[in-house]
Image (tube, rainbow, N blue to C red; front, top):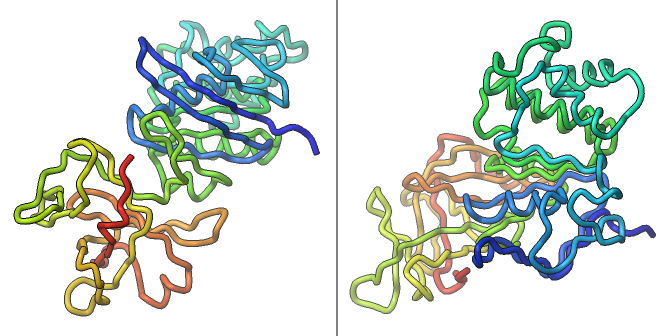
Length: 342
């Protein structure tokens, strides 16, 4: 059995003394799709830059195919491509932007054909766009050209940092389709950081949840942020919600700690028809979407409670039996004593 594609050991990275990322051990295999999710500032971009060998970690090592590799090392150059959240285009034509990486890597052959193929992946016709200056592109077109420049390299690993965060709906769809086509046609390993949890779970083989620079779960956990306040008349704490509901928690280690709810129960419809819940801690909301998980075949149900999304995972049979659909009200039950702090 060969070495894993990535083997991360004792990794820590700091910016100006502040820890941005810490991963004791993480192994990623070749050819799959890895989703990375987490709130802003959780370390997603740092994680991708280190995986792309753009920066050197403060400590620890990243092994690529069993061998330690550093920034711009020959063994990874041209094989790993990173599309940052705000990609930079040269003030040149679309064609020159797409073939730039090929030229500096001294790739031989018909570069214009490689560029045309890469542009077609992202839904851009080379006959219309190749000679267009980069300054004349819309935001979505610029993002697609930046992706085409990475695809022209036919990389073994493609790292995407929020690739659809600030583009129009059409460009977002084409970017997603292009990345999946590269994985399907070339066996490219995809590592995608995104706030689009529904899409990540639909396409990913593995999902990593980053919080405060650490991998702490698979994204199924519900994470709630403070500030928390002491509840009147007891040793509980709480978070008052905008609609008058209260999220009850045990005493937090600090006022703005992150509360992690590992398991929520969907108790059924709102009101007296909801199933009883012995702990007495419930929240009422509206189902906003259902998404099928690629790996498990289960259904992720998003319930919006006073503007805060909560996730419950059920089997397709349970969804059918309970008649769940977007727009239906639902009651969630949780055990306050089982909440852990991060």
